[in-house]
Length: 165
Image 1 (cartoon, rainbow, N blue to C red):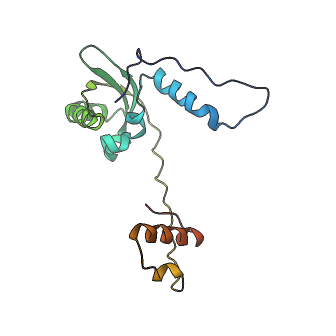
Image 2 (image 1 turned 120 degrees about the horizontal axis):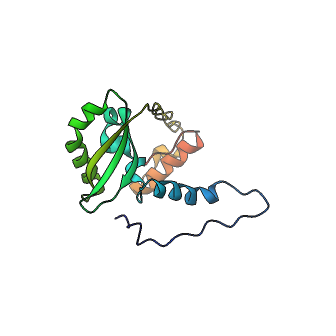
Image 3 (image 1 turned 90 degrees about the vertical axis):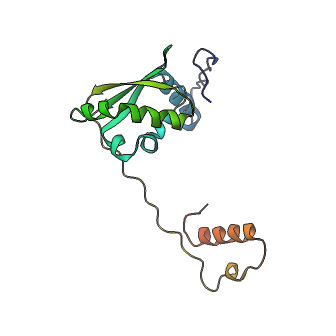
């Protein structure tokens, strides 16, 4: 469950040195700061917007700000100019989907700001994992299923494919 901004202690920024350091050390602090500045204590609403709102709605509207109020939060969405009226009619069902995803009644009202959106990036497509050769010893494995799956993943990795779950 997300913490309230008032309950959270301020985090100290990473120490700076006179030499360059990997970006990954500072990115967590920078991302938390940017999300908190926009009112998103829990960034899952922004990061998983396509799953929450659906692909069609995510294509025409995106969350930009969240303000928590006494009677519930207000989520501000940037929407394509022609789509704002349509989204206003769908706001009740969209609020229900958001609250169901978050598991609590966080959003009571939607506010729309008209503006153009950048297109969503295409989802990355990975090649199918290479199957182990017919002569690979993993094909004749007789033992625990979990270990067999691990061996198949290892054989796929060795063949240059992507690991599976």
